[in-house]
Length: 640
Image (cartoon, rainbow, N blue to C red; front, top):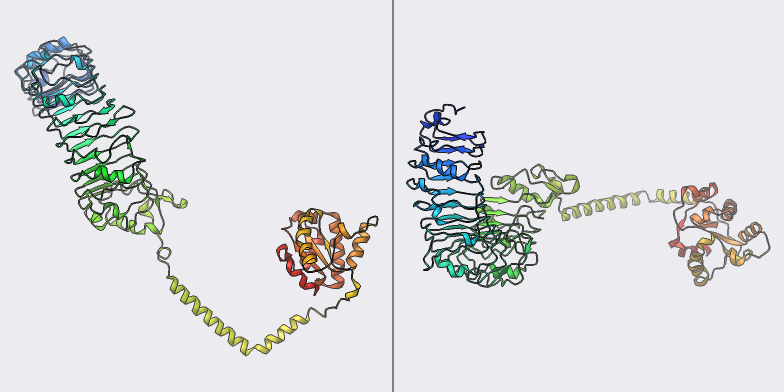
């Protein structure tokens, strides 16, 4: 099997994820005549490469044979075919598992312009300088995902190296960057990546800063650093970018002068699920890096960080252009108004509920703002200053719980006029309340004009006053014109009641007979008796007090009712269920027929359930106008 013929103009071929167990000159013959500059055999299952496989590829510049299973001595022989090539980038990552590469491993490539080598994930535990001897143009070396220890790392001979990646190794301290005479081993190194190692402090950097005279980028992310020592970075004179994000240590101590680096421009010190250490002196932590242009505190929990502390912390950073406070547990917009050069502000995924134009009063250069995934329900015209809304280029307000009421009317209008500035619009802008509008796209919500702009209360008052005035005038006219007819109809209405019999004062022993159930006794004794007998001197007949023992109850009820001027019914559900109370209702009904409605005074203590409503009680209630118990103090009127 061989590779098919390709067009003569082909410059790059990618055979990744094919199944080529072996590479030889015969297998590659159909592409050997092409002027290929970029070839990839990544993850092809290659186990063998002949020494002459690459002999014809003199124009190749980039060769990737990573993620295969090739013995290192086979690979070393295969590089002979590249000796006269233009190779600049060589990727041999994930090929074998070996503690160390032999001396002179790349000797056949010394005459090439090779500058970039990737040896990731090969199980290396040590690195000797003789491995790379003769590679005068080497500027990029990727040794990440190996097991190299600080004691077994020799950087001698890397005088031209500019980028060194030692991410995810087993370094417990910083490598040695100077020789025994304190001359730099890596004088041209400008990027050093040491993330995901086992470094616990930064103290030793102070003594070796002069060994990194051109270092501009230092990455220490995902290390268990417990102490960021004072002045650690002060001797690295050209350091511009420092990342201490996602440190593994549970408590991180930042000494006062930890960030004493006047050249520093970008600083990342976010941490995974940690709160801002209480030991930090907020007013001085950034006092010695006044040229800082970007500060990233992502994932640093600032829940209990006071506004005054924020002001003091940010005060020295007058040149700050980018502030990132993503997932920082903020409950309000930090005081960024004193950062006149601020261009980017990221407040994503916090707990902010309110935004005011005062928060951005001096941020005239702000171009990008993100307040997405917060708890803001409404943005109004007082949320942002006018200059910010005019100058902003990107603004992300998505994933907030918007309240689709009249309050959001201004924001709806602005949003539709400037949708080109809104990030994630309109997909992730939805109503959260009221409930019946939940999940409604904000762009589809159109508030009712009458609801949001009701008639002025003064206009309503004027209309009501006018209507009432007209009604009173009409009513006065009607009364004046038809006053004799009105009097006549009132007289007719009164005459339907008939004549009222005047009771004989001497024929009654009691002013009123009280019919009630024993369960309602507390109310009768405290309210009824207390008011009518004690306060107004009326005499009431109560069965438990005025009935004679030994006589039939039915006879006594009949006699006592006849001896009473009025009949008071204290009606409740207990009363309606009682048999004797039903009898009292029957007696009352008979007197009602004889003496008229004035004889009976009903007091309704509560609503009567339908199942307790007897025929007699229903008839009685339909025949009378009754009073709730709290009107009982008017009863005495009927005795006059």
